[in-house]
Amino acid sequence: MPTRHARTAWDGGFEDGSGQVELTDSGLGTFEMSFPKRSSEDGGGATNPEELIAAAHSSCYTMQLTALLGQRGATPISIETSAAVTLGPDPEGGFKISRIDLTVRGEVDGIDEAGFAEAAEEAKAGCPVSKALEGVDTITLDAALETA
Image (cartoon, rainbow, N blue to C red; front, side, top):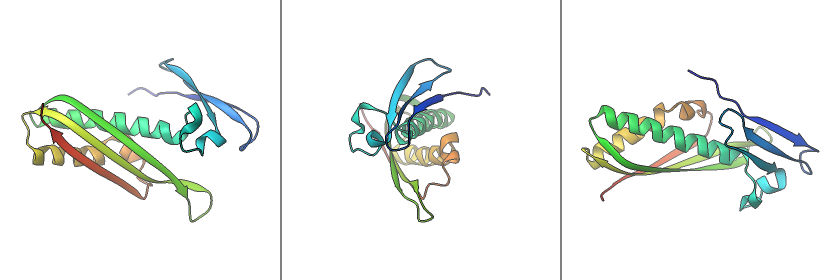
C-alpha cells in the first residue's frame, strides 16, 4: 500500500503565527492555518487539524462502508457521510480530540435498514482512520438508510 504525504510550513509562534498545509502527493491544494482561526467558531477561512481529521475520517469511513455493503450483495447508489471532530481540554494538560460524531445517510439497493445499520457499525470499527483514532474518548454513529 502507498504512503501518503502532507507538508506544513509555519512562520511565527503558536498564538501569533500562521502557516500552510499542503497536500503534496495529490497536489490538490495548499490551505491556510493559524491558531486564532483554529479556535474560532467559523474557522475564519482557514483549515485546521480537526477539519483535516474530519475529512480523513468521513472519506475513509465511506469507502469502508461501500466495501462492506458490496460484500453483503447490496448496491450503493449514494452515501453521504459527515464527521464532526471536537477539540477539548485534556485532563492531563493541553488539548485533545475528545469526540467525533459520524452521520451517514445512504441510498442502497438490496439491503434493509437493519443490514445497513450493521454494515455502518462494522465500518465505524473497521476503517483504518477509525482504528488510528482509537484514543478518542467518544465516537458516535448516526446511520440511516434513505429511499429514492
